[in-house]
Amino acid sequence: MSPLPPIKKVFVEIVGEVKRPGRYEFEAGVSCEEVLKKAGLKYFSDLSPFDLNAPAPLFMTVLKLREIHVSVEGEVVNPYSLVVDPGTRICDLKSKICVKESGDISIFRSRKMIADGQKIWIHKKK
Image 1 (cartoon, helix red, strand yellow):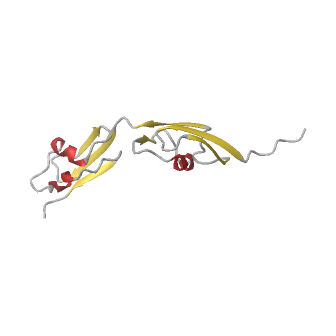
Image 2: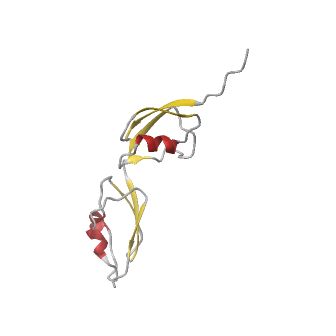
Image 3: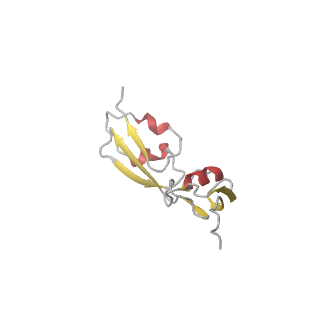
């Protein structure tokens, strides 16, 4: 019996919080990162279960983030580490943060959504 030739192509199926779920053909040993790029991520995709550099499994399920972790530092009474809901905006944090009198609160006018792991720095007033 002759040995089997090495596998050159694999099919990876990806479902869940991706823009283009489906079954994709890749070179064997493709990384999780490449598969996720191909499928496109939604804004609240939870990548924490994946080692992006590791070879992709043949089936991947991307879950939706259940919480967002954010830290607020700088001109605040105490540095904050908060857990908020996905979709929370920077302006929503104003009531949760105690800023020093010397702190510039203009950042809390931003309606930008907070990303998981984001660090927000409160600067001194000019």
